[in-house]
Length: 478
Image 1 (cartoon, helix red, strand yellow):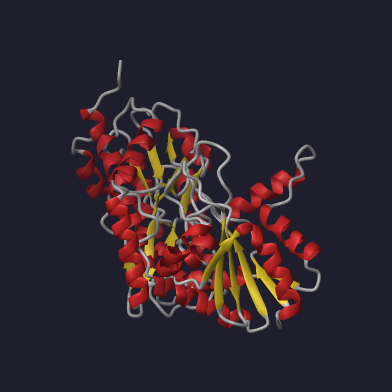
Image 2: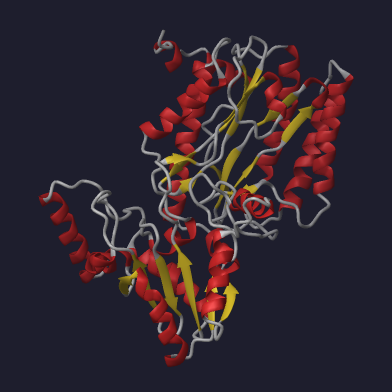
């Protein structure tokens, strides 16, 4: 760390200690050098005749704790609403435009904190947010800047991935009594209206490529989120018994997250039992579970802006019955075939093709008690067989700053890629749905199953469920 940066951080730390303040103003998860490396990579992409402008998340309009947008946080780490980051490719110079300080919150940077911000983030300057318009106007006739890059895609905020954010934006625009344009689209339109001399270009694809490969510091946060998710699921397995409600299981998992430093949910809890399981994103979580049910929990935390995504399916009474053992046993054999085949420098289609050979063997060796079970198993294997012949196949979805993280890549798996697999076995005639999910980190010489501590095999699940859980120790309030 440079001497100047270290001195600024030291001075700020001393001022906080002397003032009795313990709320951190800036992340300790990433160094100023790492944020600078990201901005340098972006300068290389936009060139010397362009600037990039990234908006922060807005101030919350309800009693919701503020969480910065992923794009803004990724490039500077500052957690202040209504701010804007400007990156000037001609000078490789970064400026954060910030609102004035609000004494109510007391833990956010403001325009007055320039000395501290520069030292902590490595940006070159800060300015009041209301001066950005004048700054852009001066750029238009004093510099060689011809283009403005800004994200065109939907903002990713609290418990939000781009896919669902885009759907939400589309629903608002389609509502004749709403018609609000997406925030990103509105900003693009304002730039084009106020500064027609600049060509406005989409920054999202550039950031997506950068975010696809995770740094060691990012991987550590994702691993921690995975540990919390897995430990929460394990505690829910211990606490499971007939008569508990789905929402109790979800609440128990969230307690484990928050007790261990998570800042919130990566996504809403999918805690489904019995007939609710067939709805893959069920989240009402209101049913009382019954003896003989299967249960699925798909839930993970937002840990310091990084996510995980894990799922397990288990019997409510702690013991797999005949049909559960039959279907789950077949599923796990196929699932493990996929995990075993994953390796770096190989494409998804080749990996799936290898796994299909084991799946077909499992299909031939399993005796099914019902025709509909055999039909479901054959359909499961057939889906993967088709995928093995498609060059653009994917194993699952990326994970990072979002649970469904950004990035499009169908080439060989490369070091730093992080994703999950979550194949589902469905028997729609009986509302049976079985899904497990693990998180995989690709290294140069192997694939790390970061969630391999989480029980998957039948014997391991049943053994864990014999242990006493927290819900039994703390009964409901009467």
